[in-house]
Image (cartoon, rainbow, N blue to C red; front, side, top):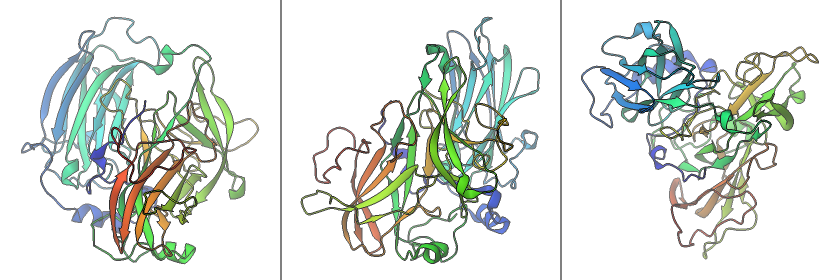
Length: 478
């Protein structure tokens, strides 16, 4: 599925943000939550949270949807708020009556998919689902995404009660959400036994450029929690200056989507020797056990406080001539190559291709987690360590926002002018894909002092395709 980048997340308030809560200083997070600005929501807000009634899923009506919002700047501490903490002023409630004939859910991967989505992963809503028997049937509570999406597998008939909880809704644009529940068929049911369900990577054109706007302090796993143009003149964190000699940083956000038929699943095991950390790609095979292949090295990333898969992406900067053509060699490149892959951007929400959120933060990429692979908590017979898993589900994307540590190109020795910012996923082919050809995202920018303006961006292209001309006529959506 080829997709042009959605513009909804390119605004100043829709900045993807990879939050690493486990290593976050408590005082800093408290300040973020308590000082966050208020304002109006995108859609009209009721005076308090709402009882949104009951809708029915049946053979003739397989998708139900609703909208909700909250006036609350909800601060409920570090623990995700429990459903029991809901009050009439904090939680929306909707009931979904499932009435399907016997045999409608023949495999464990069939069921009803319940999802809620908001503008950006700066903020957080939580999702709780209770079954007709009153017992918990599912929940989506972990941070760093613009959606929660939970599969209720093989549901019984009856009324399911859904609570949507505004865990942290500090920005006006994120105080509204859209929800839906739909019949869900296990994607493997349509594949012939033995078929490999491979991922396909698509890099969105880089966006949300900054030269400046980070404080003169060491970076944190949160990045900088108060992004505002012109707040600070500095563009490189103190540790980026000390560790890499960076003095002027072109910062930007990057979104890599999985538009294939299978998830990206990476697993590693770590025995205390960082140099021996290796990744394996675990490939889904319809009707059979998954197949593993070597995917390359991984490393412990000190600033983020967890493990990264190396060589997942590269960022390059090419000078553009007066004729619009980029140079043949980059004038600068990013030192960042490592990624912790998780589901952040639910880009397939509201379509038949939508999938549950599987790879979450902060549980992925941390030694000893081992909970999100296809072989859950498997202890290999040839090694005492647990496997740890990271990945990107089908229909999801992984976002690294401009203010995170290492998310920049060093332009200390680059002058003003027009440039192409080139982001390439999977540059060394370490991840096996179904059909390579969309891995590169490109944006033409103009730099003038500390100001960056976007000249144009381009549809995704192959890593091996020639770089486009910034002055070329537009053909279709760009």
